[in-house]
Image (tube, rainbow, N blue to C red; front, side, top):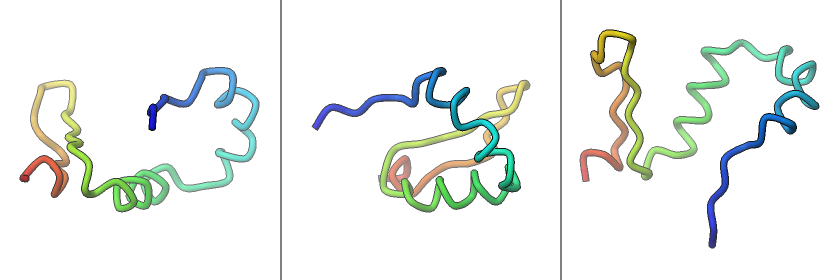
Length: 57
């Protein structure tokens, strides 16, 4: 199955709907759904903020 990123158009069309959610809570829930994937997040200083279980494997 081919994976795709959300398009900018999709985000722009649904920005009002997305705005109703708390950004931190939404990110937390999305990362929880993808915990088996290899995902990491760094800040502007390249300090690791998040390292998924998939990355550990």
